[in-house]
Length: 375
Image (cartoon, rainbow, N blue to C red; front, side):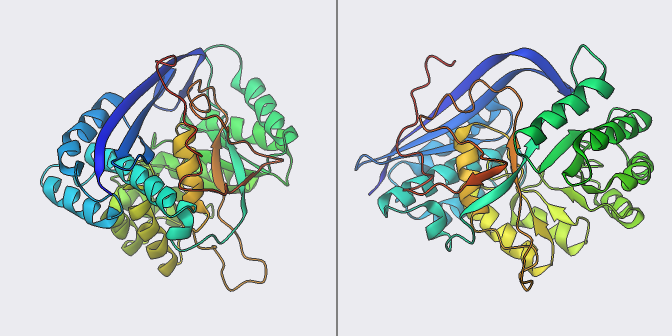
């Protein structure tokens, strides 16, 4: 079996209502999809996180090195492409492009052997996973002290046992909104906060100390991803667990996080950090350091499907316990017209839990829709 063709698809759709996180507004959602075809008719699907036009250029650049190669040799292909581009792309766009290719190769492998990709990565540790609702972004109109608690309560009514709030809009406003959301969801629902690295360590610590009383499950990206010294300062100053890593790449980048003891929870994105091949290595390495892994998930149904294959075999956080704490899955609830429109079997939660799909590859069942109408 050989790789016959590599195609890219940039999908884009306008939002009916723009929303903001701490550093930018969204009025459009995009996805960059990788399609790899073999000479025996198998097709693998992958997705790249990051600026779609740029990651598409990376995949097109990689394509000549893939044509004619054995798609089952995913580790060999990963290392070959990384070595060819080492001088130019140890992090960022190159690795994001490589991630989409790697995911598609794992989809092909699972289809070739007629089993889920997780089975070939070591086997599932769980049949389903608790999901948390990602939402609670800012809107152009209304009072966030009113619409954010209402939105959070709506997720709880749908069955979610955990929600994540976007912060980074000023320490005092963030503290007030966090208090309002906690009151709305009650004491038994997990609450995380995510600053998208809007703060420096001083402001992050100020906010953390104000919201510690609200039983925060983790403080995500309190400072920029390059600032591991800042991460360590925040981690040392607060009782809230510190999370990050969605903007980190490969086992080498996460090695630095782990050896510096900079985070309590790492959040590699399967569509960015190197694909399933690399993220399996990252999760196993984190386990050996006693650091939890909860993947960052932000994309289309293809990226979500790949992330479910990954979380199926992420080690439990407390493996020697009679009731081990399991990883938790990020499930974006914001508007995304592309997200489930491109797959015929949408991924849904039931009372805040998502079943790990059973079937070949990423378990898309070769039902990915054609894309022309979405562009």
